[in-house]
Amino acid sequence: MTHKLPFEKPVVELQNKIDELKNFTQDKDINLEEEIAHLEGRLQQVESQIYDNLKPWERVQIARHAERPTTLDYIEHLFTDFIELHGDRYYGDDDAIVGGIAFYKGQPVTVIGHQRGRNTKENIQRNFGMPHPEGYRKALRLMHQANKFNRPIITLIDTKGAFPGKAAEERGQSEAIARNLLEMASFTVPSIGIVIGEGGSGGALALGVVNRMFMLENSTYSVISPEGAAAILWKDATQAQRAAETMKITAPDLYELGVIEGVIREVRGGAHHNVKQQAEYIDSVLQQQMDELTQLSKEEIRNQRYEKFSKIGM
Amino acid sequence: MFKDLFSKKRKYATIPSERTQPTKMNDGVMTKCPTCKTIMYSRELKKHDYVCTKCDHHFRLTARDRINSVIDVGSFEELDVSLMSGNPLDFPDYEEKLASDQQKTGLNEAIITGRGQIDGLPVVIGVMDPRFRMASMGTVVGEKIKRAIETALKDQVPFIMFSASGGARMQEGVLSLMQMAKTSVALQRLDEEKLPFISIMTHPTTGGVSASFASLGDYNFAEPAALIGFAGRRIIEQTIREDLPEDFQTAEFLLEHGQLDKVIHRSEMKSTLTTILKMHQASHQRGGELSS
Image (cartoon, rainbow over all chains, first blue to last red; front, side, top):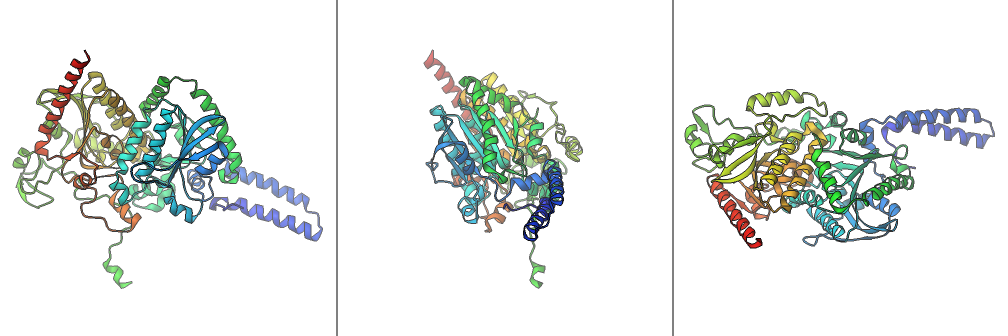
């Protein structure tokens, strides 16, 4: 059973009640079918009340769920023959970003994404999905390779942000991010991005200068974390919930602001309830986008990307 | 605990105060240097382009003063003067803050862009003014930079940017973040056309501005002691739980770590820019001769 979030309490309580009654009828040979059916109907109602009307802060919690599927989980379901490629060729290999080559329905592609850990040990190895400059430089190297060999690029975005550390600054965190923004604009192969969890500021954008950007329904994309915004705006990090609403960071918000091309539906209650089903939802969008973009000429691909970013916010 | 009385607890990230406060340079007859505390005549200070005559502390320049210090007299033609920010997220109090900064600075936004000449050589230039919302980048700042770059492309002249900014403007949320992409994408076109981009980072150049156009110069320069970095010092200290060196994220620190081409004293700024522009003009002409 998955770890439940605070706002899911009514669902959990009802579910427990139903389970209790079911066990009871089994043990005691008493017919409670009517009651159970009634409660199950009620559960449906409560679930749809909660899950179909998620508030921004609840989406933030789902986006950060410890069991939320990661880049590698989706790669497993969406692609075949994935070969991970390592290293930036200057300094090292950053495990907070994974990338490589694979087939997508017979079409060779380059896939790159932020990688959180799926447990504490892995999180330490992957620095909680917060890259250093060498992570961004690895990503750029792989994207150049994709451009050279005419492979579409697919990026999966899931990071709290670029790592704020001494070594990261010394090695040019700013320059690494900035360079990706500029170079990604030059590619003549199609690029598609999907925010699968948290899209944290410049650290997310560094994989986000793409032809088409999508977000999973319960993912976020923002200039600063709700906690950070609250600390700066109201000098109070506990106002994060308020900041999450004010800052407009959810997938539906970004679609309305014209920053992304579409929202990908999520499994009810969040992607972690069924990875395979979620991957299928992603797959149908991805396929449609690939079909569309591979029709365009190299020049059209580049111009479309330029025009799109050129217009944002005006 | 008794000893807690003596330790100052840091509750959350704050922005360094004294040095980042806009220094009111034009008020009063005397000005005190924040670094060496020397008190000098404001007129004398102005004559030295607002550089302390004792310790070389570089005071902050307003965008107008900066343009006057590098662009030839009478050659500046401002672009997109009337472009003004709206409130795309309906952020509380944002309009009031913009209005108050507009009144305080006499500017419509945190950046001035325009055509001008440096020692007779044509350029397009952008200068950020930290008195306006810490020169944070929202949609209008991003748009003005993009349009300036497009003007440089149209005129086929070099682009020069004096950055000074706290980063992305929070009140415009993710739209501010996207300005990092917008400006960088425009610079890619400049790059492709082989037109030079000279980036000069002044105090302070941080966050989303340092992580986009400011770091993308063909030449990345900085003024002495300017604070330049991606993440804030306090955030880093809290994250890695160790004290950072005194000179961390200064221009000199960046130079030492290979992140800058050169640190340039304000008194040598115009002459250095002139030399670089002349070299580009010469090789551009030569390139033309070679291909014709």
